[in-house]
Image (cartoon, rainbow, N blue to C red; front, side, top):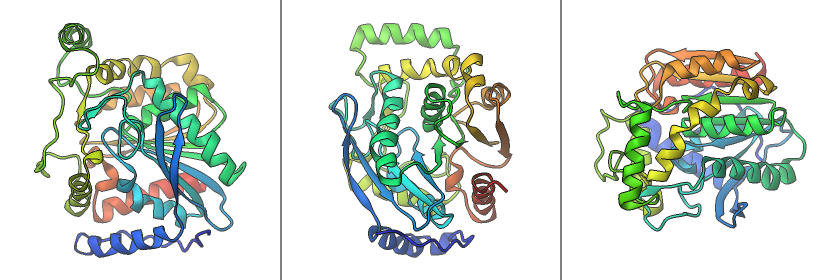
Length: 327
């Protein structure tokens, strides 16, 4: 069953969000294709996708650290109403996808390239068989931006367009030098192993502070928290020593001049001016090294721009639409 797009530039007000989101989920259920696909190492990846009548492209949404598909349902509707097929999946160690460690609260990956190979699986085994050779668009947030970046390095011409929203080119270390972090990790691994929780990272909390969050919309913040409270599979909040080690190496790889120059994909990099999760300066370095990249900043935006409110969120979606529609 295919969805018939009816694009309308509408963003739910805070007071209307719960009712609007419930209607959205009811609509999406009628068109959802859901299941699991085996990754390169046999780990299962949970997915859902939506096909649109007379689609002009297919969009794959690649979420960020400790996130999950449901957080992107609102965005899914916007892409569908723009006339695009939409594919979502929970990255390994997240949501309903498989884990490489037993502790549900820990986000772990043996190698960052595992995330990239998972995206290859989604494109090759889900997108292409279901949607054929339509242009491939990639939308990513935060950690997902690094995954998409490395995917483009491995497949310089595979995606026609890619959006890197608050991409994790380099995470904020809050003053800690990189060499000191590697030294610390070496000691921690010797003490507790690669799979143990990085003791200076986040922890799962049932009552997190909205004011200290990366969101501006309380309604969207609460929806995501309610989802996390509903099932332990959504409660990962801590990085392991291995995840931290892999992430510390992202910047050098992401900014590789030769690999950046080879990428033929049209890229939109969206920066959040009030970001306290990832650093802005490396994002600007990436823009200069990519062959075809546009930089847009939302000076008052926090890290999770898709969880902004009102006019700011409308402007964000208008920015996505203009780029993907070639306006």
